[in-house]
Amino acid sequence: MPKVDVMARQGRSLHVGLNRVDPAHYEGWNGALRACEHDARDLEAMAGEQGYVARRLLTREATAAAVAEAIGEAAESLRKGDTFLLTYSGHGGQVPDRDGDEPDHADETWVLYDRQMIDDELYALWARFRAGVRIAVLSDSCHSGTVTRARAVYRLLGAGPRFRLLPAAVGRRVYAAHRALYDRLAARSGRPGGRAKVKATVLLISGCQDNQYSLDGDRNGLFTGTLKQVWDGGRFEGGWRAFRRAIAERMPPTQSPNYYRIGPANPDFEDGKPFTI
Image (cartoon, rainbow, N blue to C red; front, side):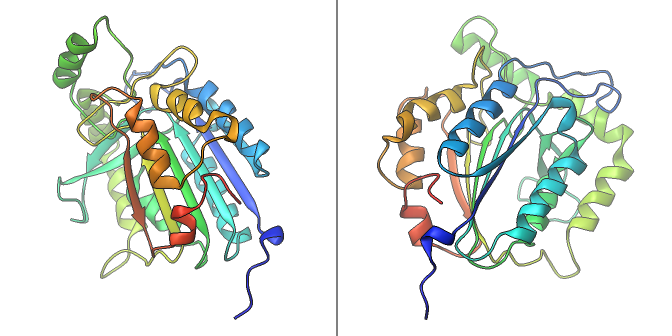
């Protein structure tokens, strides 16, 4: 079997950062944050240094259609051995799970400018990539949570930090107002008999566990800022799991990054140095 020519490999990246969302969709809530656009710009610069053809979508540009289109373009252009890097900085949320694939009966979401993008939509996009493509996703966001639980974390950490989560009460109002949209998206993203098969290898490192909260900051989110410190201008040595572990070791116990894989195992990818094309 012929070996893949490393010099011929492509690397494409997309960097999404939202410092606010459209109150017209989110029932008056604008989700103001401070550091998400900085996160996207910094990670775009890091990707460019590694040879990626990088693109960013910031706040108003980061609509669900624009994000899906950019991922779809990468799926069309990348071949076996190529790498797609996707970074997201913004709020995370939840909508009710309508296809029964979630143990907690909720689909996690990225809170994009004009609407939430549910995890079923992302899964359907991963299924469009060819076998052997390597996908790394870095998500500096919360998956879910309630305002009551967030207040408990406020008391633990001190004076009122900004969390990257769609408050549960706001999420319920948004879903109630747009239920037909979100139910239709969930139904369209699947297929009879189950989800489409993902042939690429997708690695996700998220900013926290499902029951935790990702902190915003003034220049970077806590996860992205710590990631930059560990990366250390490219001096980090080790694979993706070691990278996640080194980041977690520098973060407080209230925010521990998660790591999981979708699709087939690819030891060369997982054990290789992060961001390598």
